[in-house]
Image (cartoon, rainbow, N blue to C red; front, side, top):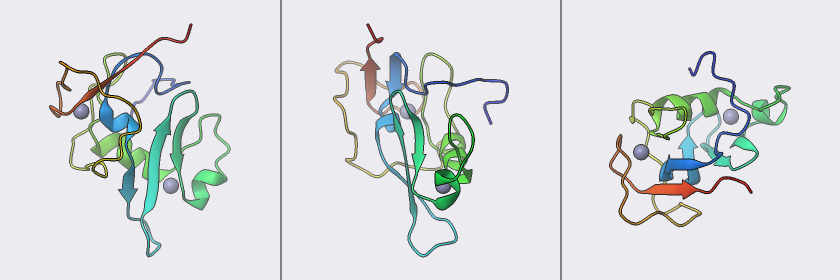
Length: 117
Ligand SMILES: [Zn+2]
Ligand SMILES: [Zn+2]
């Protein structure tokens, strides 16, 4: 997944599929699903223990990888999107979506992230 792509800030600036700002439930070995989401300036988050104990600079875990691979997560900068077999939790978008744009991969809303001044 995303091999050779060094990502320091997954949500930097430009147009992003609104799924970047939504929650994903990923079923692991535990009874309750883990929650995966992305935070601008901080990268991915997961509620599992492996993520919490990850020693990577940008923390990750298999649930984050699963979301990256199977959700849409298109953006105009560095990702043409996953295979879209995983859908985000409806109505969990945390930011305003842009009028007049739709994601070229999933047809969903798009968020325009301004570059940090
Ligand atoms: Zn995880
Ligand atoms: Zn999309």
